[in-house]
Image (cartoon, rainbow over all chains, first blue to last red; front, side):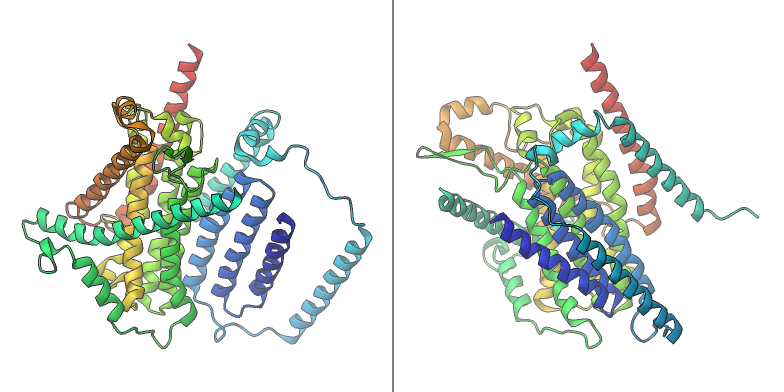
Length: 165
Length: 345
């Protein structure tokens, strides 16, 4: 049952990610992106990574995408006032896109289908074991990354301050 | 076994869904009665005895009204908005433990739909998702007032989520678990978390008021500035769903507060009652006590609404970012220190 659920959800993820690109209206794009993140949450649950699933749910769906939507609603972009791109830019875009596709196809062909990975500890994604890992062997990197985030926050606040004349 | 399990859960979900709808329905009636009581009026008293059928009459009116979809609106999203508001309001009830397991025959029935070990975070996620109904509806209306209201709702929700999360962290330090069931069981008798986390509780409650868009934080519906707020363009039952979702949200957040801080289905002297009433009736009394606490919180929500005037927008942001968040951080640090000292000595 798990495998069939995976294939259905995976197909949905791909479908909604494509809709993000093909949607004409930027607000619709963001809404499709939210649904895409929701399918990712389902993937995490299928992998028994409950904590990751719920954090993805809160942080990406609940906070970051709200801010995205916030900005887009304020800008109120639509088809009518979207600036038309010059033919040169379009040509460059096509060439770059083709290059990316060739690289992706090439790299996918090079990889062989590996044996299905069997998780040694299925309870790894549960909050208790994750906490023990993060605050045990990975204490230093964990704390350092929190300092990194704090400095980014301070930087963002500094950017909004007007310089005193 | 598998099918019996599914049927048991399905029945439980249906009952909880029904109860939350009925409570939300009668909250609209209670709101008017409480308002009348606080303003020394009578309130609705025409439909049935004491106006008891007023919510039914209101519901019928909502269904019968003409439905108007603005021409320039985004039709699809205009419809999705109220539905999403209702959905996010209802799914929070899934992890709340309504009572300890009751025994029917020799079968134990858990009065909780699911006990996931990230229950508190799940509630938090559902709360953070709740703003989408308002945002999508407000934007799709294609009305400047609705859009302004949607943006207010989003920024208010994001701002108060932070303080709410920090107040929950302090609670987690005390309980050491994220499963709502375990949190409630730890508060056996009168060991309620509010005794250990009074500041955390007050922070959580203020944030719950803001997250449910209730007065004094009902800025998205500020009539004096924004006509009707995000539901200006809505009519008929679509408007009804938005108003209804607010009452369900109020019910769910009351239940969460009662479960996290006020002991859920625990009450002083419960062991004596349990010993005298058996394993079927005893837990049900606990459930009744839990609902009593929820109703007390709902009354408090209404009491505040008819007592405190609405905040100004800058006051709202000032309170959220410069008062609640620092207090919440200090609360986390102090709680951590106290726990460290207790464990050391």
